[in-house]
Image 1 (cartoon, rainbow, N blue to C red):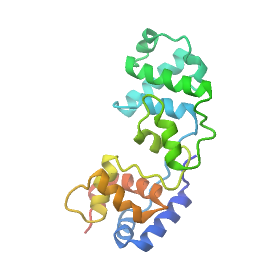
Image 2: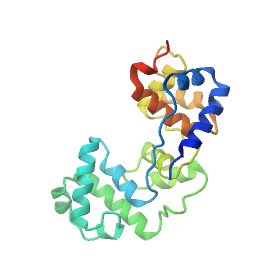
Image 3: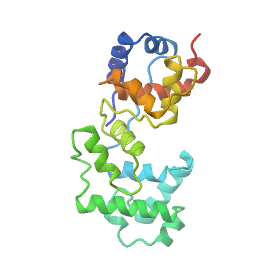
Length: 209
């Protein structure tokens, strides 16, 4: 389960006490709402279905997959399902391969989502070993489904844009720069990531006066 509202608030208060620019941003737009997803296989399935499509399309594909399999939350239901049947549910051949890879990793026990390594980098390595799960997807899973407190998806475009805006940069910092900038904000980077998305959504209201 993801970070609670209280955890987010406590982390942002700690960051605000150390960094005036973050304090000013929180004062302008307030605290973000929690972003919570269920731990386990189904959330990763939905992550794969959501790649490069709208939220509405991803939801539609999930419903069709659930209807096709009878229970899309059960990885064993993927066994024996043809690519043609999956395409009928709106799922591309590439994503079908990703879903099969995930189901095989989970059913074989090679990927135990109830017992991922406590070390964040080790957990990310376990997840990205699955075909179709990249670093960003792994980080978002650990943040929203496991509530890990120091996950920093520096490759996320909105995170890069808003870190630059919050800290007063003239241009968007690169992924490498954003990763370096956030070192000072350990161990509260998960809350900061959630805040950058909140800041991005606030648009003009988030701009310094």
